[in-house]
Length: 119
Image 1 (spheres, rainbow, N blue to C red):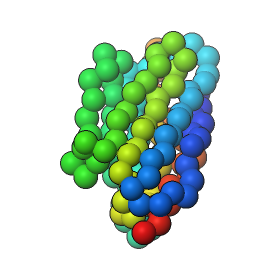
Image 2 (image 1 turned 180 degrees about the vertical axis):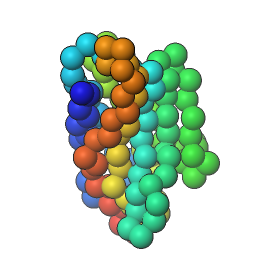
Image 3 (image 1 turned 30 degrees about the vertical axis):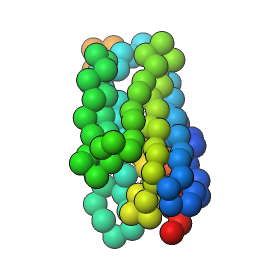
Image 4 (image 1 turned 90 degrees about the vertical axis):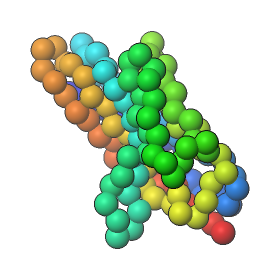
């Protein structure tokens, strides 16, 4: 079982910045990919950004050029640096992580952290 704990959400004005962090913990696991997803009220959860163990990244078109995903493999952490935030970025942001725990594939989600961008 791999647990994820997010931090760094909050309230920010439009044009501001926030940095989200997510720490993975558990026993004997190796991570393949980590990522961030978000869900706004009344909408489906959507991909924000992902990063593989080889640090290949993928971003939603809506955040390209404004958000940067990074990871620290030694600490099993993933970060999302968000700049030029817009009110439409308001959502609960979820950390996701997948890989192998022992010989079993896992896909874990965090509890979510609220990001609110005021206009």
